[in-house]
Amino acid sequence: MSQIEPNNNEKLLSSNDFIVSKTDIHGKMIYGNEIFIKISGYKESELLGKPHSLLRHPDMPRLIFSLLWERIKSRDEIFAYIKNLCKDGSYYWVFANVTATLDKNGGIRDFHSVRRKPCAAAMSVIPNLYDQLLVAEKKDGLEVSQRVLKEILDEKGVDYDEFILSLQQ
Image 1 (cartoon, rainbow, N blue to C red):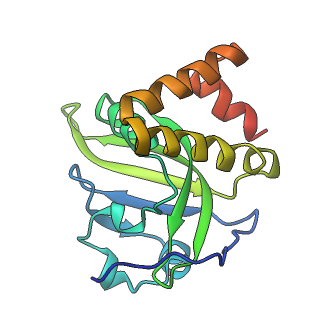
Image 2: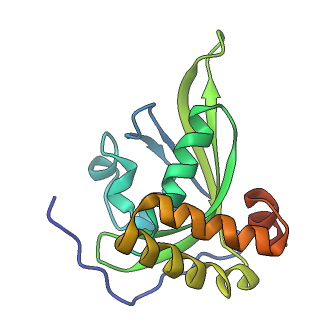
């Protein structure tokens, strides 16, 4: 697929919308519910078997995905705000909960993500935070972006989870 050119058209989820998807252990999509497929602008056949990173918006700091993969590979859940890129270049924000699905022996079978509309309070904070992290990454790399996030969290006296969850209340 060719490179998608992002535009400023935002698609909004309703408060009743829940996006659900699953990926295999390598991050390739194996399931997407109807609303996920619809909002992405792709056909189901264009999504299944493709890396979930197909939807990664260039405004997203790599650090967030680094945290996500670190957590879910350790069998821990993570909550995160994600800006996704649609096939037509538009975008949508989600509040995501991502977990590993375990097989009967405790091994990771796949990854499951449930996403919903982020609240206004989060959207007044997250885009600016991500801009700061992205600037640090582009200038000095992932480690500096990680340090910037740690400094912000330390200043607030919270850890990542407390901060993220407090914004969605």
